[in-house]
Length: 246
Picture (cartoon, rainbow, N blue to C red):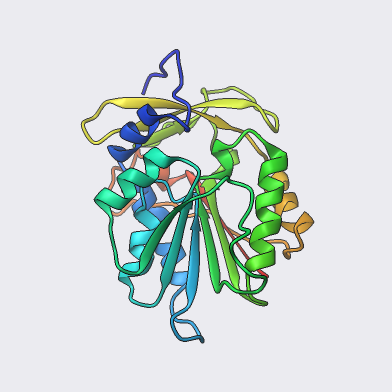
């Protein structure tokens, strides 16, 4: 994959249109199963889950189709939400525009789970992310899970089959802008602007909001014939999944 000169900003209609056509195979194999496994079952009737930064609604639709969850799917991009409502309508999912910082329509201790997939890496504002993390902690019931999935900061520059986060051999510090290539379903690529944060920075977002330090999962694909032996995702995790509880 070759980076374009001008990365697309996430808050644009161009990004929403391109993201609609992204090749989601690695996310579907490495993120979605972990999220669904950790949110299987539940002790309350009709539990409520938040999909925060839902984009085009892929995770929200997966959760709703289990039949176990009612989902509020939130995103600051009206264009992303428009695609989500068109492509992934579901009676158990409500899509809502929000400011990326506050959940002020939700009461304290009123939510049974929260999921945030590939969102922190797209926001350059640490203050906004800190405020959002504190809000997630506020609305979750005691003991409710928070699952934060994001790009693996230890895998910058690695060319995976559907993405590359950063330039090969480049070294990034917290807050640096990182060009990230995403493969589209037609074989072309889009380049987006993401933002590097170390694993310690992710931990601090959580612990400073009052969450316990998270469990960390770095999933890879088995080299069992579904991908070639040379595929980077059989050796290095493209994504990380952090799990903590209110």
